[in-house]
Image (cartoon, rainbow, N blue to C red; front, side):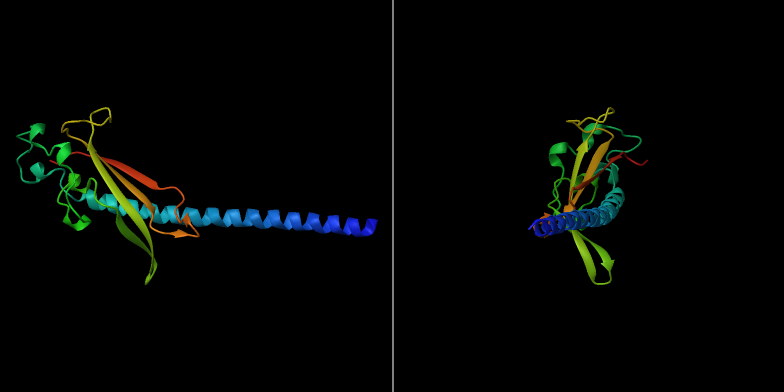
Length: 172
């Protein structure tokens, strides 16, 4: 009887060790996979931010209503007028991206296989200290937020959303 009990305890000890080993291996693999998703999400965020940066600062600077010679900030688009476009391709200037419905962007892993991410953009005027301004200023802050578009087993592929912020000013 004591040998049977000793053998049973030895089996329990080996099984506990094996279970802990496999759990730590699984945790390490999840960490590596999450890091890969973060890299893909960061690439999508940078791509979206570069696309936004290619647009004019404001509709009034694009049509020269506000220019280097006429620097009246009251003529710039007001914060209440931000947004209004339905798709990335329809936005004409930086503030048009504000409040845009979540867009799905894919990261192509290999030809024909991509992983989808949700992209949200917010735009606001900021003052010299970086605080939100209620009236037009010479600086806008764009925040791009990337989240998982799908999940595996109820767990989002990207565990924590990625947020990228950048400040823009008129280029004259």
